[in-house]
Image: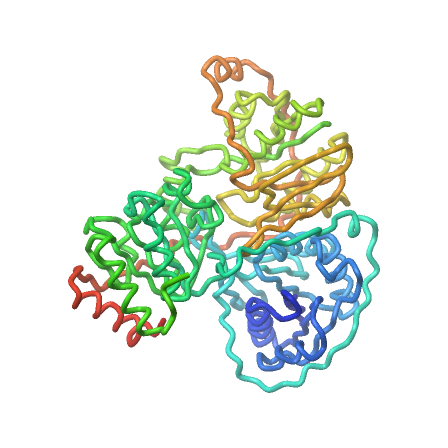
Length: 327
Length: 247
């Protein structure tokens, strides 16, 4: 069994999710007694060596002009071409904007079965089974792929990678042949919210809800987020009220997240919000209503007024982390 | 421009989930079903594109009889035609995509979808359909302009936006924020009840994936509860540092 992990890059370096994809591929290789390789684009051979620390020994660069800033159709053709050449039965993508769109296209090309947003992969007899959250995490489904070819997207922050290896990565080039569907779409530009972390990828999230009483008070959330080095999140109520952008919404109609730490401030914990964040590894809730449902999922609950608790918490966290509170 | 909008029927976001007797699905008991929230943005976008460019808007769902209710909501919003592809076997995502691609391949310039269905949250349909049809796909689109055959879109990516250009025919999944879906007025809802729904039978397609178990996530218990004094907050920071080791 051979596994191919797609390693996403940004501005010439691997993203953290690339190491998580290696970790997942390594995990599948251990379960099946197989081996794994990487495929990447937009990164030079010297920077690819970083992946050696996570145990990658073989990596292919997908070399085509259309893949410098890839669209899903082009990337899918390249990855499935490589999977066929290298006889890989399993392909792993990160569950990112790019990975989520590319993976199903690869599944069609390889006639594979696919599981999206995987949080665990286990062996069950001769088969692999994957666990994925459904209904935004209100339930967990164990899914078996019936086809021999398999594609998985993996949820960020789950297959946490540690740099425990010192492998030298052997890098080869793969020049895919792309048809005209691959070149019909062009990425013409990317704008990033500078200095802001995205809730879908962040290791720490500080979220605010209606308890903040108005958009003008969200500076309290932003300051605490800076003290933690965290992304800012928001409940559906405050996004629907126009206080915060939808990109920050956590919950069933926003983003489903699994950070290392989730700090919910002034959020009561509607079912659809809990669904989106309750798989976080550590949860802090600050709310003045001690009966708020958010406390049922909190590891650390503070029953108190956000306007009194947050400034003091921000000061102490900033002292501990050394992060500045000011923007 | 002829637009096909793929929609689905999902449990309301306020649903408290319970596992049914089979152990492989959630219980339908007491569940209120709604049109997948993201699909409402797709329907609205299709109606606005029709207003600008002419053509027709067809809504389709692959579902059991319950899908009719979902289609009635789309008809009340103003789609021209509704198709129920009756699926008694419970097709998987791939089976649904294969079913839809047969229909979409006929004479639709554009397939619009919600960015994800909030039941299985798999984000697969746009990619599957695009590849099956041999057409471009653009996902999580929050701004869309179509001029002739040229498609210009903005899509949400991690920590920002990506601008893309592509061309018709293609498959697009839309994100909340692209528009404000209209609320159908009562007369439209009543009229929609009388409009025809075309029924077709879904093909039997072998499943590529099967759910072998469905369970509730592990329940949390024994959380620490603190007050709001300076000492409590100091204790919280200590716990985060020494106990949870997150800072």
